[in-house]
Length: 322
Ligand code: TXA
Ligand code: MG
Image 1 (cartoon, protein in one colour):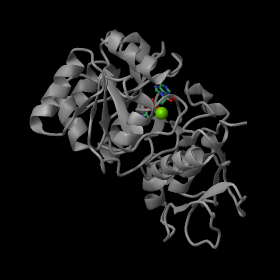
Image 2 (cartoon, protein in one colour; image 1 turned 135 degrees about the vertical axis):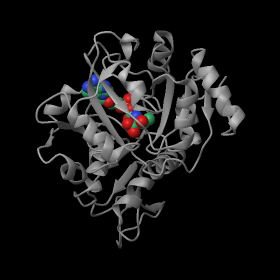
Image 3 (cartoon, helix red, strand yellow; image 1 turned 90 degrees about the horizontal axis):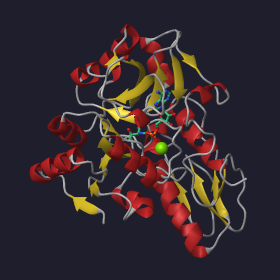
């Protein structure tokens, strides 16, 4: 049974207590919903991998509400400190070296000597984390390789009955896609996954930043090419539409689908498009399935700034049905 919690003071305390007992609970962040469990409890972490059917080689991000919590298990280097000062709390995950002695459950890091850490910019998540005062492992709250969730209905679509609870908090995922991941244990520091914070914003703080291409980013286990995918075919950079496709557009366009058309941002705003991306894909995925159509066509998204993060997700989504 998946218990639904409300974000009242009492129920937030209940959630923290349940996590302490080893439950796994979906909690919203400003990026996407995370499936949270106590990162120091190996059996809770196992439950996360099992519920998501996630390969054991794909390490989890650990979420904290203070840098003090990090000091118990990882080394905050100078580069990381600069990034934390500039972007935390926020949509940036930082890879750090693990300390020799720590109590993080081994499967969180899938055997690596490094660990991914993030302080989310979301009041409710931070309140749970502060009450529990333990690092929270939290991958996105969806079955592996499916679309990421930005509201509780998306979580229930693939995880209902497989997780202990959901802290309901819709309209929370303002950013709308996952955090940017940056590895500060290599020189120069490297962006492993584009996300809610752009390469340009990071370059203002770290001019030497390096962006890993799809081929080199395999260093980040789990940066699989297939990911974030709807259960139907998806065609990006579409300039025409087939009879049995639905349409997802960006900005002004004369294209429409006779079945269903959604627009990520009529005014061509990449931030708005990013916020709407996963919800639009969920709606279209459900519609295609219900009406037995072929798939989703998507008009081109400019490959600049946040558009790079959107296109990264779409490329991976497109890869699933080959
Ligand atoms: O916005 C987000 O980042 C969301 C919310 C819930 O915080 N979380 C999220 O987690 O996207 P997940 O598990 O779906 O993605 C974690 C990715 C993995 O695919 C892996 O590539 C990378 O983080 N990762 C984790 N630990 C790593 C490490 N030590 N070195 C390199 N990459 C790592
Ligand atoms: Mg994910």
